[in-house]
Image (cartoon, rainbow, N blue to C red; front, side, top):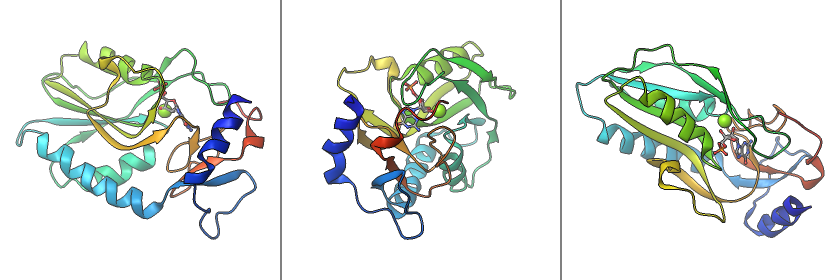
Length: 205
Ligand code: 5GP
Ligand code: MG
């Protein structure tokens, strides 16, 4: 019910779903494909500019939600780097966060290298905190974090929960698309959208 009200309160900032993608499960679009693509280009150069040149870099997208964002981001980088994936699952039921577990640990050797973690969205921050904490034990030179979306949550997050690079700040609502799912669906949308209130309670992931 609470989520239902949140959706209604943001309906004013949603725009219509682009032609061909309309669905009764989608309430509206929050960030268009063109906005995503132009922001990703800027983010990519911001990140590249702060990485020391000629030093080893390992890029670690978090599975699965960051897959499209990371794919677009890394294709902007013409310097050499290693790319590996890490996976943390946050036992979410429907749209809520739960305890987290490693489902795919890093395979790359990250010691003395500059690590860039890429995630889809910063919500409670526990995923990024856990990823950073575990990877620090492997003695990388530095760890930078980058998220496409940061939710404007009511209670301020501790400093350790911040990302170094943020694509867009969004209201505290459940979003899908551009890698983000609801019950494993909607990941392929080229834009970020909001699902209809009547979908809540129907999915687990
Ligand atoms: P956190 O650990 O920061 O609470 O949550 C991070 C993870 O929860 C994200 O990587 C993402 O998988 C999932 N998540 C958080 N908010 C949303 C959302 O609005 N939509 C979707 N699809 N996933 C979310
Ligand atoms: Mg995720």
